[in-house]
Image (cartoon, rainbow over all chains, first blue to last red):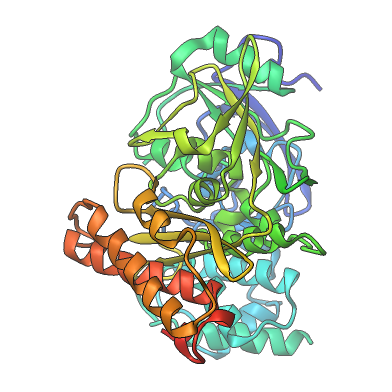
Length: 166
Length: 298
């Protein structure tokens, strides 16, 4: 496959990005300045939200090669060849996963805008540390902002999901 | 906000990156983890015409012992550093502990040691560690590679000794047998430190034989406090009560030597108070086995 990014000399304002999005291959020519947040949303995965677009709020958090990152701070071109997992990969209303069930049961959301970011941050944490302490959970979750819940219910939701997994 | 338009090119090696910087001139910027550069692009605080992506260059994320020093590849992420298996290398433990202070987990997954040093924020933890461990930054340019001492690397507000066509390839943190520690304060966990204090002390034969103290957040760039270092250097460490008082004196000297600014985060007075507290805390926690019981809990 020919890359739109030219390696010798010849920087390009258009890049071809080919990556795996929630397990399926996607390929798109985009402006080089397109960030991964806009890229996944343009592909139809609108569960990932644009909050601040400068890396402070975490609403755009998704998994890049299994680890949580702020997609507003990653250029789509940097994710070329990688695996991206968004909130859509967790489950849906008919079959929610353990985290989604726990958020629902513990009232870990109100308006829901920050929720996908928290779900993916928690998913990344639990992938790396399946049995985190409350302090570890609070420390990691402090990366993201929520204006509605006051955070206690989000912490409980992640604790419950961790417990449900083990 | 969205970034302004730019052209993108991927570098295959450090030599390639440098030749691209030379070709495209001062309008080109290196992109590694992007955790400092991309927010600036999104806020339109910078408008480079070309981004040179160095994130895929192989061989720049190695961590290796080099005598009394630890050499870290520039593309090593803060998360890589946090996950280090410290084994028998004492210098690695203090580096690993510092990594966890940086930002938040998703930022540490992407941000790099080299990027943090090149960006040179006043409160950069790696910059402070470089200053207190007499680090050398290994830098590649179009004609030559050179080693830049940390002591003269941070020159001003987001300004370093790097030439426009140069790239940091690794950093060698020294003093691996010293007791080295950073203490910092921010209102929320993970925010930029309002003040950060780094200390590095070598104890030998009942004395402090060498000391380094550096502060972030009190000037336009991270700074060493050489006057305060001299108060500590040569001092006896045998008597716990005397050492406790000496630490207070050193911390006071630090707070009186600086001219911090006031801003929305803190007043100059508060920054001086923080400096005193954090320098004391850093030294006390490093030297807790030489202090009266409970002294390190302050």
